[in-house]
Length: 97
Image (tube, rainbow, N blue to C red):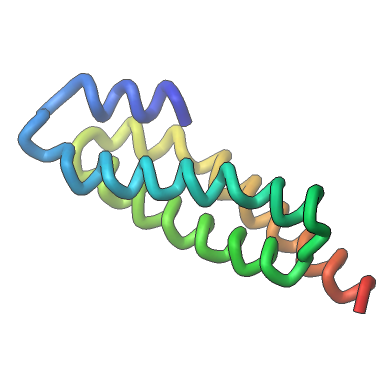
């Protein structure tokens, strides 16, 4: 994620504002997830947070692709990890209800 953002923000500054905003938004959501999941044990809210995170990272990837395609391809493992984490979070939520 860091290398991908460096590639994008190092090139074409006129196309960056939208990509920069969504990048910062997904970083904030990414920061909130472990707090909801581990500290508050709010599994449903953590699941919603992960879904929002997944959607925002996909949107960010599309924006990165418009600027530098290689930066978008570097996000694919992150998206796959988020899909797996969402699956795990859903399982934990269902098992604890």
